Length: 173
Image: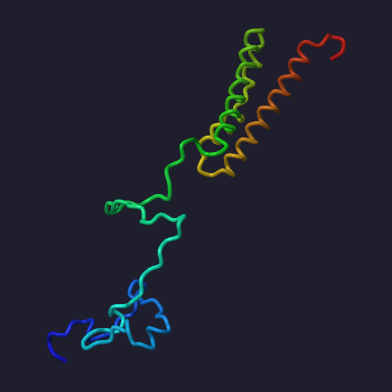
């Protein structure tokens, strides 16, 4: 071993994907062409008679150019979404419905029932806000939409019962 040998000449390296040669045709194997075995050359780096097949007519003839990435950045598979995530509209509608129930306490205050002014749909509004804060998890958004509508409908049913008792004739209640 002389002092001028490189590390590649001293130890054989594991073959990598881009170093692999395509399988030779039977005629090339019989002729010995394309073996690349010559004095001082490694068998996996020699010239071959292999040429790549032309791309199908539907494929693009050249790969798409993509500029190199800056260090520490990553390439995303496609353009970012152009709208809000799924079910955000339903969550907003549920929250708006819960907020509209604040009209009932105002009506109670106007008709002279200050105690009923305290009856508000606070759980429905809270669930509506929580549904909009968890848009990364669709299951949580769905769950909070359901909770919001359940609280809102229960609140409206309670208000209907209270109003019907308030305006019922004195002898039937």
